[in-house]
Amino acid sequence: MHHDDLTLRLPMPTDGPLGPPPEWKQLRERCPVATVELPSGDKGVFLTRYDHVRALLSDPRFSRPAAEDDGARIAPEGAGGVVADGGLSDVVPVRGEGHQRWRGRLAKYFTVKQVAALRPGMTRTAEDLVDAMVESGRPADLKASLGFPLPVYVICDILGVSVDDRPRFSFWSDAFLNVTRYSKEQTAAAYDEFVTYMTRLVEAKRLAPGEDMLSVLLQEGDADDQGMSDAELIGTGMSLLVAGHETTANMIGKMVALLLADRSRWERLLDDPSLVRGAVDEALRFDVNVGNFGIRRYLTEDFEIDGELLPGGTTVFCGMSAANRDETVFADADIMDLDRLPNPHLTFGAGPHSCLGQSLARTELQVVLEVLLRRLPTLELAVPAAELEQVEGLSVGGLRKVPVRW
Image 1: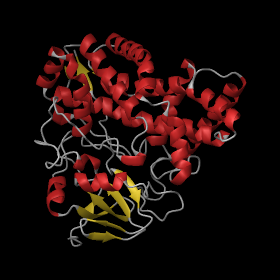
Image 2 (image 1 turned 90 degrees about the vertical axis):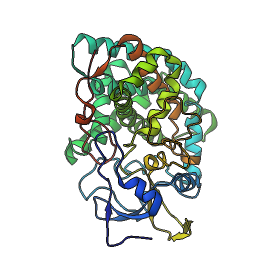
Image 3 (image 1 turned 45 degrees about the horizontal axis):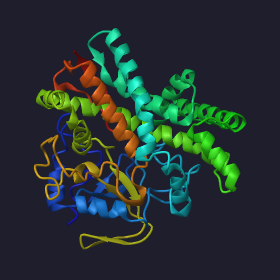
Image 4 (image 1 turned 90 degrees about the horizontal axis):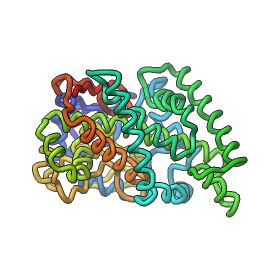
């Protein structure tokens, strides 16, 4: 079953900027439990079938590797952002009861209802960003003008960060996630600045609480003595920035690129804006770059999958994007179908560790589409889709730029 003579390496090169790696289909059919080598030289197991990926992600026993695990590292020593190899696990509990309690405290800020309350503000922000993009002329880079700033501004809003500090947040987020653009020293300096900033922010909220999430978490803690420590609050702010920014920024760019790559998709949305919700989920399913490595899971005990025993201590890479193309679950999986229902894609994971911010991300993506369709109905790619360039970095896959005109 394991083709040891043929070493598969992650990340696998894709077929053009928007297409899947050709190996995924072969792996799903012939070798759904495959041994892979990472850029660090470490080895892991790569899963590509929907039911396998879902089973592992849903299993409450396993979570991403913690600092003390001897898990497979993605990045070679000295490369990789703070976060590429789990640099936050010292501030926020990543597994066990502590993690579930932490999630529980945050979950109520990310309910559909809470996120709906943020929607009007998001819409105004998106409109302002589109106006600024139009003003600076065409062609424009949709990712830099809209994809990158919008999620940061939304997170600043949730945390109660002042508008003037948004540019600093943008820089920090970029520095934590950008494994190629900044040196280790620059990343470490950004990390220290961010922690200092968040420490002061928490102190300020304690003295003069607002309606924002940090203020409410602080007051809850004072009320029930089981609250988060200041270190956890700082870690929470950092986690939200890191988890919610680059992933959504990239997805905004990729979603618009996918819809414009075959402009009949865009035309359909112009004719029928009620398709926006479905289009967002289909873009999430269809995107091949949901992190080049999928989601990591560290096996704390033996686990049997497809009749094969994976020993405890194995690091498993769950290929959600590969699973999202599984023909046994999605008919015509390689076709982008804006009417696809149901659409049980695994882009946000599954089970107890599924993405806490999925309602927020979906809403941001819907708002972006609604605003663009309304403001710039003539939007089109300014270069052929095949010429879009992928980001060359380790942690998250995306397009370097999304050049558009209107």
